[in-house]
Image (tube, rainbow, N blue to C red; front, side):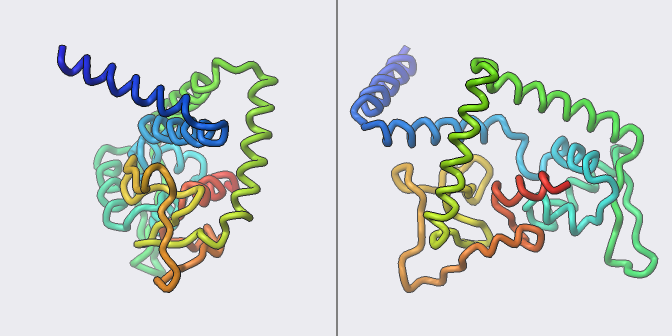
Length: 220
């Protein structure tokens, strides 16, 4: 009962705060809430399902390339890959010319489970925008792309790598689903600190941001 009252109080406070904001503030709040929901629905960077889907789309790929595309630490990638290999979903073949390099490919069962995972993901994507008509989806996409393009130019000086991760309009926090911000606003380093601007070289970036990973997946 007490928890319910606290929840209702929190909702009332959030609603009051939302109504007190101007249209720009309301846009920011909605984008932030949508981002929070997307993070909650996401399987995670190094999830088994995501790896299966990625391998089904790329075909045979080296473990290093896969790790770079996932944007996770090599140790974490090796652990998940080993689990998938033990489950009979993928195979690793060490290069004869370079023993440090291993080619990864899906097994027949891996292909089957990857297809199931992709079907579930596509269904979820359709559900996300089921409330919109095709015309509304097209309009929303055009507006988001316009804002996206503007932010890429407007905030390019703030795009940086902090502890190996990009921060800025298209960044994620240090941990999956973690809100690494101050009062809902992006955190940027102050002048004089070690700042590394994003050079947009997503292929060679050891920890690509969500924007970079989307570009990598779109190029496949």
